[in-house]
Image 1: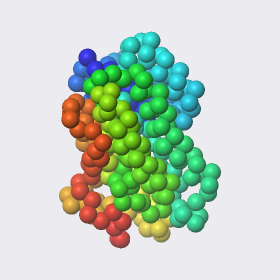
Image 2: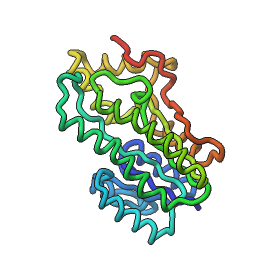
Image 3: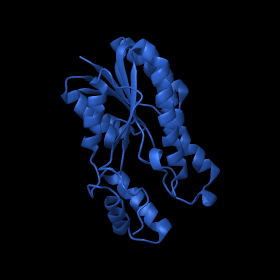
Image 4: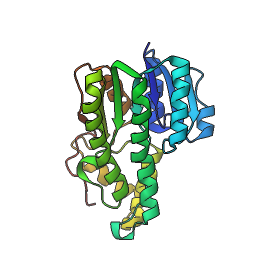
Length: 248
């Protein structure tokens, strides 16, 4: 049975990943800063309330995982926040740093402390974003962090490859759910539009004319966790973005 750790795994995409790995027979451990969501996890999924940006907390978490399981097979580096919605010239430095602390520092700390627990044939799956492929107007901290995560993933793939550990990233497009609804609302306010118009523009910017689901992303995570010769790759799950900044 594979042992799987998922950061930010008690809500959203991370929770669907956790449920999908558990349904496939894996033993699953998630982190999240939402203590209520951790408490509400099904009994089959272990949970720890810890911030990925807290190095002491992450080191302690990995010690707990090592004691309970003896190691890890799969790590889903999934934690992130949307950051501020504003033009670069209006973005507060503190808000910029808060976004990078979770999205980028958290990814770094996860890799740093999880890699020593992994053995031959292990896999790391990073949640990037199409924002890390094209940029994202009014979301500069988030876009910068997601570009950096791709660089971190490729470097980890090079460093850990000799140990048999594969590293890949998923770049979701807009994923249906409450989180993207909040993004649409914030962008609508920044652009003087309605949230419905913003959502329609995002969907129209894809070849398939739709948003994707958390299950779409989780399915790709399961595939990458078990693909023995794929490493260092970024796989977009986005309905094929043809216009990353639709004007509507």
